[in-house]
Length: 251
Image (cartoon, rainbow, N blue to C red; front, top):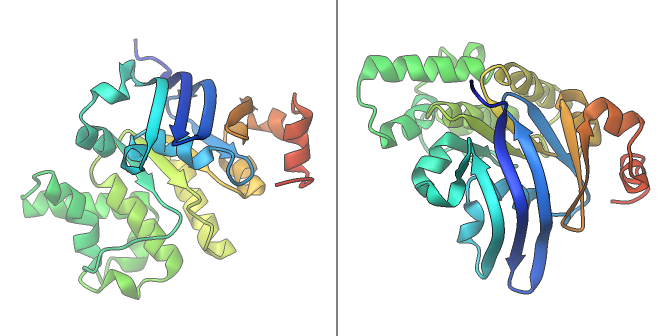
């Protein structure tokens, strides 16, 4: 029987030099859910997200204690390249490569050994469709990715991540620089992608967290204050600090 738990986080502590960024975190992320993570700046949201595919290791003076398990296996025992292929990340600012739309999407697959042109064509089309971008670019795949709008570039980055066939998608403020229409398209893509992927979304937009998250976690000062169904978090939170943040009293 396949476990419904994708990630298990046990007694996780993270430091950067003397800064205690995450404090004794215990939580689970379910398979095929969208987990929204909210909280003010410097609450540990992005540090937590980057721990799921070990990107924090690139930071100086990084130290951790505790365990992060993916499908029961400690992520620190998984080859980093394999882990990041399995757990893809989409950043706040879209970062297309200085290549064509087609080459942007196929780049990761090529780096992992894909060479068959027909398979690459299928991968590019399938990934662009999943990112809700195919209909907008199918007649100009050979044009520069830089000619796309900001919202299109972000969906291109989602497609590029999907092309290497990950299991998990991490989104770090993916709509922070986008207009409402582009934001809506990214959110629509997320809701569809949930059928086949586990999604963790860090966002400062509490309305976005409410729209797409099945569960929501509230971080404050490096601690997990509350994790529950999104409808409960936004209507009857257990902690008054959660209520205060959602109502805009701080943050």
